[in-house]
Amino acid sequence: MTHVRKAVFPVAGLGTRFLPATKSVPKEMLPLVDRPLIQYAVDEARAAGIEEFIFVTAAGKGALEDYFDTAAALERSLADSGKKEALAALGATRMPEGALTFLRQNQPRGLGHAVRLARRLVGDEPFAVLLPDDVIRGAEPALAQMVAAHARTGGHMVATMEVPLNKTASYGVLDVSSENGRIARARGLVEKPRPEVAPSTRAIIGRYILQPSIFDKLDMLGPGAGGELQLTDAINADVEATGVTGFSFAGERFDCGSIQGFVQATAAFAMDRLELRDEFQAFIAGRSEIHRVAA
Ligand code: UTP
Image 1: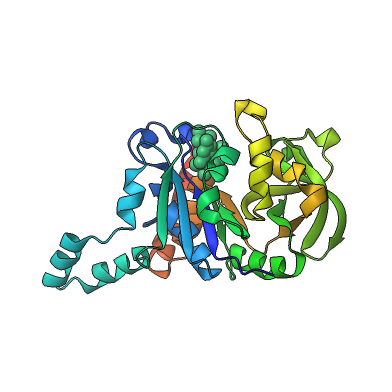
Image 2 (image 1 turned 180 degrees about the vertical axis):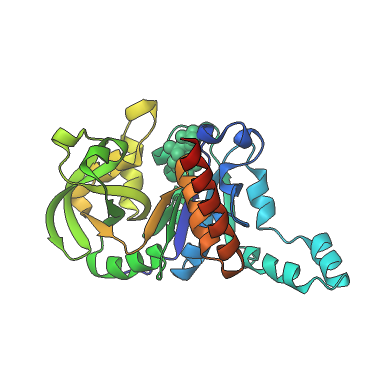
């Protein structure tokens, strides 16, 4: 089975839920504590052995390219003034030369369309897709767990998590044919089903390992829900020929594409930091008390 070496990061979306912030700052550059969302996704990919990073960007996303570039003047200035810690903080942004590619999606025509644009760069091998909006916190990075499981299953793999039945309409959901621990074989994926018709409560979240056969399916499909080319439609169209499994990762997922999820993630990552935890916890407890008394 082929090693997963390449990852696609579709980051061309408009990020309308974060306007006005995203008028001039890409959503993926919004920080959880002191690291932008994109850093969490790239770190997760690196930890899974990814060597080539393909970003599908759009107009106004230039800050993402600058972020991973060498900041020679800044580094010199920090070195000259002996700011070793600040200099070390830049370490995570350094990527091997030539490992990153940026390509443009001219119009936001959907996640499937964004992935399709990476065809030439991906070539004929399995590849990962990471949506930086979904931030996963856990002992073992989620994509690394998936890569290990995918070495046994092959086919297409989507990350899944259990959601309450009354939330299925917010997700793509797996139609499960058989389960074995964290791995579920799927008959198909159902986009945003109402609870009454949801085939399961295994919701799909933003990590995928896909076979290159997905590109032919994307080519064949027209626009789906919302007039956009949907990645889940293409996976569905390839269930019989290639097979699809859901992988229920160990970890906690935050939907940082929504304001509520982003704020919760900020709190969770702040609590993880020893130097911030006590004061932050006391602050939140104090605020809770103020609101309780006022209510
Ligand atoms: P979302 O559905 O969250 O859309 O996209 P969005 O534009 O980023 O955010 P809102 O809903 O307007 O607030 C899911 C993922 O797919 C990418 C996004 O960048 C995000 O990572 N995407 C979506 C594209 O790259 N291109 C598209 O045409 C659509």
